[in-house]
Image 1: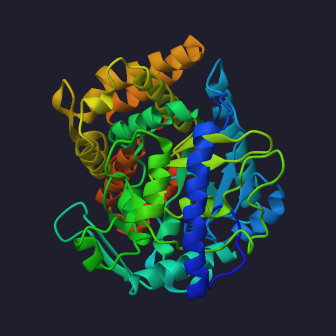
Image 2 (image 1 turned 135 degrees about the vertical axis):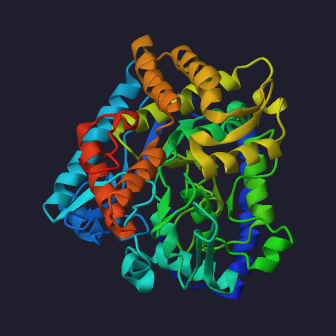
Length: 500
């Protein structure tokens, strides 16, 4: 869904033809996957989605159109919300000081966008959910960024669902959760993430995807940064249920029947990348049935890999938390694993540490003699993902050879050291692994990730007499000020609960 499209409505005959062509794409991809040569350089990449907030109130600032004109840089692009901004960082490598350079690049990109935002009375806030979002923001279409692909996405999701979008998310206490309906997919725009890409050879893709799925729970617990939405304190990583429900094309009856959601963890370990593409085609009807002819894109060009327009577009409308990516490239194609479960923020140091954990633990797990996913069921991995999104570092999970354990202890005693050893094996300088391992270990030891800091800060402000809206606005202001320091979130101070 990153590419622009030419239409927002499609006929029944277009949908029928698209289904046939999509299956032909899949057959071609299976043959190509077995015979072609792919680039295998192990490069990594990052996409960062951010929020725009007004300097005076910290409320969402609908300025993305103007800001992109001011920036005039193709690395900055629209996201679905007019108060969102996305930046695509240059491809890099985890070897040597690559992750230090990633942190510096994140700092520069955030600062550059923030300077442009300040000139228009706003700030750039890297966070999972902007805490000051209100229901009023979604009352009309002003929230949505321009672009046919966003309009088409909303139209097709609502048509497939046949009724309004319903958000039901448990909160901090009985009766304090979220229970609202919307006549648009607007809540999806509240979900801003940091997406990590890893280039993977075909023969290693299944192991890499299985490893990413197995570790998804601890990964999201370590990085959780989205505890507030529409004034409610909900999950530590509320992006997870919000994204699932905001793009749910199923009416409740279909969900009861076991129809899969389009934002999906999955249901089994795989043996090939093709398994995922085949599932996508077999289980999910097309949302955006735009043919390559409509997009004016050829299937084959001399001397290059097949473009597979329909298959790639369809793959972009099944939102797996770990998504397979086929990129035909210019000369030689490549395959990527796209890790989509991390929230944005808090600081570049935190985000680089999160990347260090992911790339390091994946390398270690893929090369284990007895793979982790052979020692745990897929249902166990899915349960850990849900528990860690709900409770963050306070979650308890079932883990092979350990039993039921507090995830912060599992991270501190086993997974963070294993990830940093994997990072060193990848070729990262020992000092780099030690630096980011230290940030992650302190986060797990103190229990203070972005979500915990937000919760503690709002609680302190409310105990000092602030209302929930006042506390959320002030917390967001303090959050942005802390980002300016560059200090990782475990070192951020929390306001005293009593005025001195």
